Length: 480
Image (cartoon, rainbow, N blue to C red; front, side, top):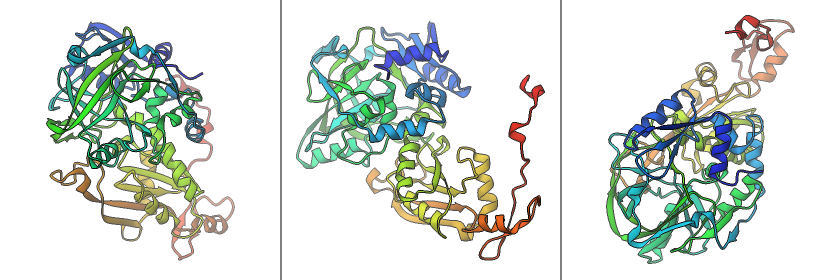
């Protein structure tokens, strides 16, 4: 059975020894971030800050390791891709209920006070305190189809926030469409504390027009229960810990930022629309949630990694069936750097895959293609392939004038997000097509290091590995 809510997930972490509960006082002003970074640096547990200066317990680090991701998805490393991909294709529509736990407490109008919540400041030069774990639920202003996604929200005062909605994301496109239609306001909900499968579904790349709650249902194997907000026409998860009901005002702006973002750098602040908090609804004894951003790897990157890898693997596999694996590592912000392994079916297919990937909405900056014998998750093996299976003049592709990766600090930051362009590099670090077949044919049986000649006459050599080392019985080493 899937987790019904955030609380069941926390209990599973507790039972697995992956939740550390702190009774001592820890301040949301930078100290929470220090604790979360310290734990994440040793692949440590999630942290429950009971004494944070507010009435709400604060939980952080629930997504900070791949092991916790497997607990959240109730699967194993071996089966996780199949788990995600089967969920993506088996969609289940949500159900709407009349009453829900998230409406056990309703605070509206002048009673709204965001300062009552343990909203953290993560980095010293952040523009303010940020809600980073919130999931925005917004509807297409024409079709009414909902989208969910993670977006940052800065607390401006007790009843006002501002936010960053990138123009290439669906929430940003919903806002742009509302403006074109002449709307001066737009309604959305910011949800905190959900069934973890929903959080891992948010990064999955789906076409516009997709009802994201149907994808979540498929991923969970059961319909998501939704309830209509109290003051706006938006449906939200019925068992969420807390919901902010928002009215976004296009006629008024406030300075938002900077924030230490997923790139590991501060993004400069700028004027952005305000979001008025019309109401806050929450469960009894609601948990608030912190999510660490900044220099990779943080839980921001781990949260996105598996969904990105699985969804892009499915997209590439449909066009290039011999793609065997994909990695979108945290070192590239789980966005700008992609490694793909494949067995080429024809000469130049590795380049074809590079160009296919460059053209994707991921906007990668570096794409590396390797042979299937390379572990795409092992940087040493990938760099070995680049060093000895490629020649820069022959195997590097550079394409300029492409839409820039969002928040890339190496691009001119003075330009609006929708006007930033950059370049992409592809590296073909595969053996030339046919070299492996030629190697098998040309090397005599039992020869340890004989040459293999590719079709163009260049020699490649057998890998000088040590057969059987993986299975070597070494009891003394096991005792260490």
